[in-house]
Image (tube, rainbow, N blue to C red):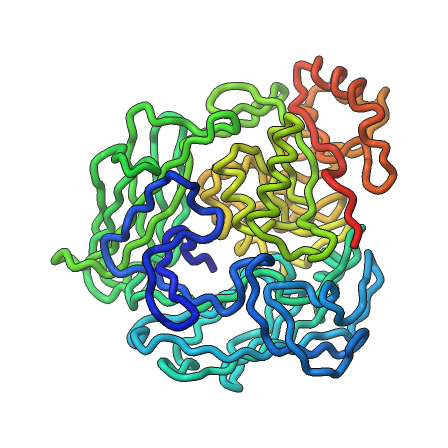
Length: 518
């Protein structure tokens, strides 16, 4: 369910190919983006790139403000923030409220013979998608996750196509509503992250999962598709300035293969930590056995090793770390959950100005560019499957774990996966994370002890003293509640001295970074 967003060839709105452009936040000023060695992934944005750069789509909401009226709405966005529908907080569900979207687009005629996917970075909450009047596939359920449809057979290349999307603010699956819509946070509706068409060569690198350790060992587990003859997968490691780290390395690929793994070892690579956010990239090329390039892509990563040493602490690259963090919702008072790299950078800058080194994604995976910026600027991350005291059923939850991990697996900033929050975890999903993560990062159950880490929330001063002296690693994923009530800072110095003096304290995450008001 992943597509490579690092160095995709971007097609402008007039259908003209431009130079290889990174997605927002993927490459910082001064970095050198390596040109792909062979045919690249090509992307046609259908919405704007983010909430600061939008494209108007035709839109109608079925209830609330302006119900039944066809108008236009900037996308990506939440429709409540543009005068449509109704604002809702917490468990106030309105199942009837839906948004109908229409948009015309023209895919390049040069995409003939390629595999073409319609990719949604997220939509709240159920999305029913049609291309030229034909269903693109099953209704997607889950409001914070990337999903895609193979629309190769539905597109009319080189001419106008019609995309229609019905977004239901509440889900037809009650467990999705339990996990996402009955929490202690705002419920919005709409296509609030970008939508794009992504085109691959017929034989392609579909996704990449990297395990790069502090000792220099490197492995990339590569998912392939469309390989109809013997081939070879070649890799090259570089720093972001283009300097090669090791020589090229490769592996043979049999006809019909759907995966391959390439490995190497780099001598004393620059390591990634929040204090030294050194990044690397791997250039991957799938080619015929005769050397004809079929598809090339570039993925960014960092060399680092994470350890949870039972009864001791959390270690990165062999050094014990203490997380000084905040819980962060993706939120802006005039935009809801629609965001941009500019706003993400503001939040990260605020956290770092306050000497924080960590952030917990509460209570859902963020925009991909937020994680890009955490990689670049240096913040440790807890990435979270949605759940607030209720969880997804396994049938709907398993594909969402897959979507979460496949999208985010290569971010060195991510230390842990959170399986829901405060009882909102489905234990049947605990072992799913490792299926897609070759690093096998620990899974947490925020609010309780799991994976050797006690993450208990909102302990009193005396119970914090007991926890800090206990046998488990103590790292509250929420403490000193300060949302709306302004109380968080009042006792922080006392709590922090107590936690900082504990042999097994791994820090903690204050609730929350900002008040969330529209």
